[in-house]
Image (cartoon, rainbow, N blue to C red):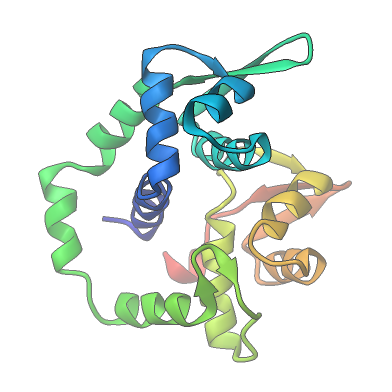
Length: 191
């Protein structure tokens, strides 16, 4: 299993390992709901529901449509099935047992510097910082162009110093920039 596939699989499992998000998925499996309907059904505040829906939306598990000022969410069951079909093959699951060496060290670095998906601090060590930057670069899709504001938003989900991390992604050739537009480039050093 590639590191990108592993990270995606971990993101899905982390998103679905939360009881509230699972309950939201259960509600949306039946029909679309507004944020207010979900909040009332689960006895939660609407900002809490919105937070959980954003986590699910970031993984394309839910989609939103507007009707005036009301936002309605529905489950993207096809995306859940696609992820299962592509990432949970017997061969890929078996490959998890054989991961070792540098990958184990990189996983340790990520465990040391992250609390969930929040980067606790930017590593001072260049080698460790590169592991963190590669993880961060995996938050961006290949072939997609991002305006600087979107790059800042994505990075700030993980650490408040988005400007430093954005410069580091460019400086370490994990992303490129032209006229305020950013895009992911292949990591040739880690290929």
